[in-house]
Length: 514
Image: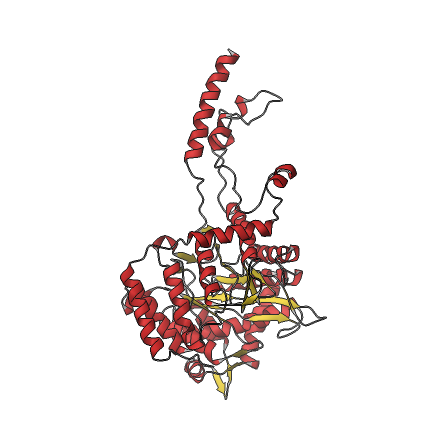
């Protein structure tokens, strides 16, 4: 009877193994829900006091606004404007928060890439805006067009990145032509939610035109829902410069998404305390959000912050610190106070893809997760406090993001998962579950399969060449780029886009505003 029973189990096991090998492991990283309960660093009363102080700051101290158009909108909305100083009343801010949408759908190039931004959702981006790129094969270098295109392809490859960020500056592309290049790369190499720099109305409007025509949209359809986004940084403390103000207005008027992000470093351009720095950041974010709603009530906008401390010995930015973590938690409390979807950031100040880089990025990342951030920028690849994006670090950070995405999946505990019939009752005391029906049915799909980590023992690892994680990461990004996978796109659309770019380039392009 033991032999007969064993034969039946063996047959079921072989059948389960074949089924497991035939079916790919199902994953869903495109629409993540943050399953971690939000943490608080301050009490509700303290958060209310910070919000009240931010409103008092806007009323009594005001914002310096360099854009005449922005000052005109503020004045029409009831603000007191004296020269370049704008003093906002509480009622203006409250009205803006009431009209700003609490849920935003971003339309990507493919419908299954659309994203929803609201409290409780979770969206990741790799490092953005760096002037340099670095990898183990080519070293550290000023960012080029080739680097930008390669990083777009790497971002496209991994589903755990749901938005396309600005990545690096392609410095070999002339500034008046750079927006053509970056838009063409995003539209032809990716079908994710694209990014447009706010560098003045001429470049923004031409970028809108390229995106609208490439997708075959009418003006009304384009403006009805966000087709792209920008990131607007205030100039802390309490300054909104010309291109950033124009960006807020242009994106709001065209129904496109702005992510407002004061960049406040404690002890430098913000008070040295977490509470003081976040209060300043909150005030600046509220002023920028108010401007979008004055330009177009109901315009899509995300609350944002990027607050960390500086190294007081050198003045250099530091990331992944306890203060950075606390600032993210405080920002999350204030974002929930407003009800708006919001953006935070990870990142690292390390100069290499080393243990410091991993520690800092993960510390900053967990601060974002525990704070309930909707969009996490600089979640992968960011080094030197934003001065470079590392190809190897992007890969190693993706491993962590994938595992976080796995944690965000809802764990199942039905009859099959509990496994009385197909696992518990199949194994005698002191036995093992390797051959249990439940194991044989699920062994190829139950656990996360790493893209970079190596679980082999020392002997096997040595026989395979004893490669460290960075070396393996190099092989991964090289393989992705060699495959050169691209979205399926109608050639006529690409031809029309390139014709537009050639025509505009012949005219000299569009210089940014300053």
